[in-house]
Length: 127
Image 1 (cartoon, rainbow, N blue to C red):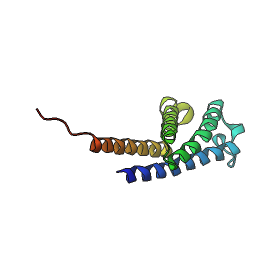
Image 2 (image 1 turned 90 degrees about the horizontal axis):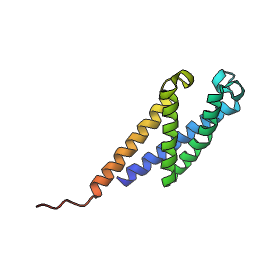
Image 3 (image 1 turned 120 degrees about the horizontal axis):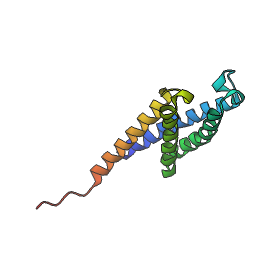
Image 4 (image 1 turned 45 degrees about the horizontal axis):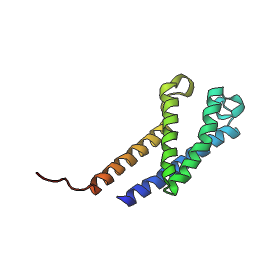
């Protein structure tokens, strides 16, 4: 069980690091489209991109190292992205594949942690 959790953290860490790199690509302005260049972004996209460009790679490193703070940052990134895409779809667009990956890996992690807790709990007393 522990090995499964470690590998899930590492895979999620790589995915989160890749998401962070994608946000940095947006900030640097590799593509000349509206939401892919900082100077052409709306103020909401600027704020979100800056925050997620920092938090996502930091969370990815934390997950790779299996540090507890990595999981916390991962939850913060997932919450921010879910809030962006679910609460404000007119600004950030609807949910996309990136958000689905983050939420799916987070759900898998939660299920593995619950299963681990369940397998290590003391047996109940009869009577």
